[in-house]
Length: 135
Image 1: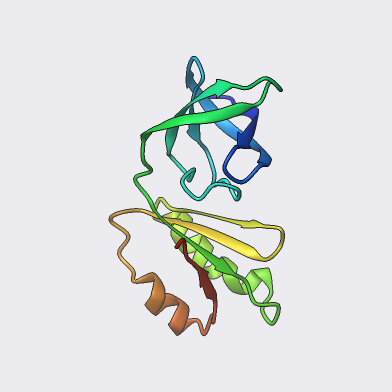
Image 2: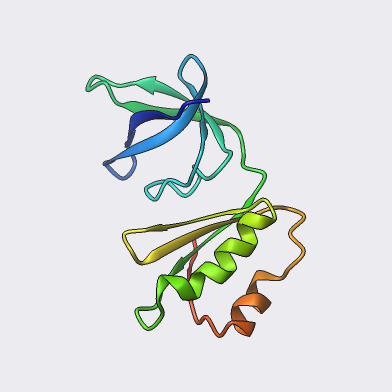
């Protein structure tokens, strides 16, 4: 299915973001990556929107949560992207996904049956990352 570009307005934060999604019905979408502006909209999440007065989408409700465990980290400037690629490539080989936004925020989507402990892998690779957590 061809990705569709939508503008999503987050009323709570007043932020507008451009997202690439799969259309799965009238104003119903599935995330094909992770939204940086909304931590609930991660890979595989399905949601319904309405169009506001500016022609932007606003989430009405999430209809299906992602099957992935999603974690976000600040990347350290002391490492290069190639250093992180080892972990990212292992995720992709086993059905996961990873992305880097703004050059310093990594989001990883871990499949439910992932055979490795991500924290142990990061420790083994000596990747000292700061996790971003929702409060």
